[in-house]
Image 1 (cartoon, one colour):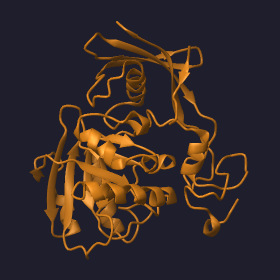
Image 2 (cartoon, one colour; image 1 turned 135 degrees about the vertical axis):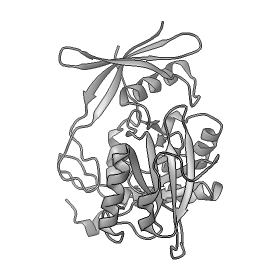
Image 3 (cartoon, one colour; image 1 turned 60 degrees about the horizontal axis):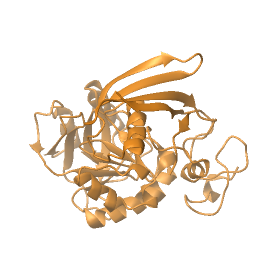
Image 4 (cartoon, helix red, strand yellow; image 1 turned 180 degrees about the vertical axis):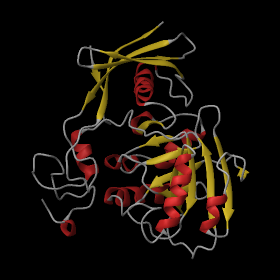
Length: 324
């Protein structure tokens, strides 16, 4: 038996907002335009195993407006942004712009955070510089800054990148900031615009999607309690997509929603005669769990509000699951 992952032509000026009743398109069949997050819900795109890679992160507070690319487009200095992004990515890290939600005073200093999301190394360290140029001098090895035992809740509200992140993300960050004002930040593009509102919980790097349909504060509460909320969970940034998918099916089958449950022991790709297959082994107290997956490509879709050329995305179905 194969089980599929469950889900839980207008001009820009007249495009409907995400969640509104107007528009029924944003797909290759040409039946009109609709926000990518609306169409994703209509297609019932699976959330599980869609968390993008991120072992370590460098967060930079940029409290003003963000361009389409927060570090590379005005109003941020493009030359400085390129140097900063190049330096961060050369260190094997992901850059992420952050800012507080609501009204913000003129920025006179620039906070930064080093985040390690690798299992067993979860860390958040905060620092601050007096000018953005000084960010180029911050060590990226985790030796600088002050260690913090508080999480960071980063909600994508990157309006110029995708309108769904603006509309749905702002709803999420507003509600979350009411419950966790010190831990909550707006952030730049995370990936998975069609799953807006999206957020990532640090230091563990837990991705969530469609959070505006749920209880953002409740998801944060669960995280602090060491649990994941499967209905909106996309996966952990430090883990590969096959492992994310295998953990999803293990949670559905065996019911352990613990943050560290089903740690990966190994993964192997097989040629299934035209179908890519994966075997993932997971740790569990009652014995090793073996998950066999089939990797497929979706039908052609438009993955963001600004995408004009349909593409396919990877999806995962369960072939078998067993204890060994």
